[in-house]
Image (cartoon, rainbow, N blue to C red; front, side, top):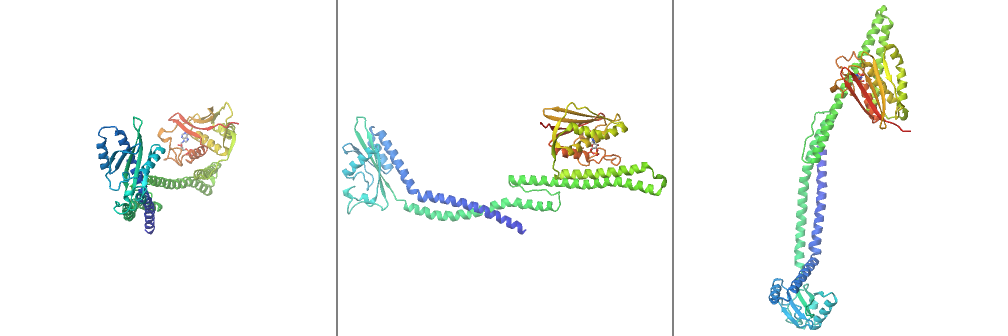
Length: 488
Ligand code: ADP
């Protein structure tokens, strides 16, 4: 329980950390744009609008009702307009503001603006501060008493634009508007920002808690199921949806649980099978040994042979079990070398000579060329022994086994065919499993351990070989594997 609480608070603080970071960045941006850069933005926007007004005037300067237009513009945009000719004589004039600069401008100043505009591609901006406004060089009329009041931080923006008329003469359009100080607005925004900060942080906390709850709830649920699984309850199901990642985690864990339960079932089956397989020959050995001890006449070579055979079966079983557990635990590494598969098969077949002579078995192998491969020779011979032994054990009455080697497209394919009863199609995938024997009912009577093909499969898979089996009931089976050829 304690652990769970701790993890949950971990998520809350993490999410809150990110949320708070986000809020801080947002507030910094707000502060930057609304407080620091507001004045600059305001001036830029004002400049833009005054420029476009000048453009409208230029387009309509020739029209008949230009005066009407100027009046309308000046009232709507709260602008003063003055248009002068080259001799700086006023042609049109609209005066709407009491503290307009352009109408009361000294002629010297007007001439200076004209020159400045002419030098500056036909237009110029002037921002006149309060001090300049009351300066005698700007206008004599506003000195001393009776001057219209101007706020300390108020500025007057003058835009001058030269226009070339069709008859070659020039005119200068002067527009004047007031830049009102934004101090009050900025202060309001600053105060607002304090409240916004507070509200946002509280909101972030609230959202963080909600998100964390949503995130951690399914995790807690999964954790409980995982604890069950750890205790060995493989039937546990992982539930708890909410979002895709959790659903995927659930799927993975459910899959892991079924796989674990399979492993568990296999382990139980393995122990049952091994003990069964060990007990059968042991019972035989003790039985025969007891008979031979108690009944003198039974001390025959045949009975001793049975004991030897059973003891051999035991040792094969034990070494098979050792092999398979080594192979499947992944501790077995391959000892790769380059050797001739053909030679290797021929050497193995030499050992079957006696069997062929005495048992009447016929093993055919007529390769047309040597096939060299890179593989673990000892393990590959284990594969061959297992496949050949199976073929001998299950082949038909004609006791015939055919080995064929084909080389194609850089691969060598080896087939081991018998003429036995074959295997049913739906059992084919199962025979590679550990301890699988087709005739489960009559296990004792059968020679095999059920491990042979499982060893074959493990070794071939370690070599990344292709392998398989084809079988027709009544006709026989064909076990095959293919490996890439090794080039010199
Ligand atoms: P076993 O030691 O019983 O032969 P294997 O793993 O080698 O174990 O084989 C598993 C089962 O596959 C065998 O019990 C047998 O029923 C079947 N099998 C294997 N090889 C052949 C074959 N050549 N023909 C028919 N059945 C076969």
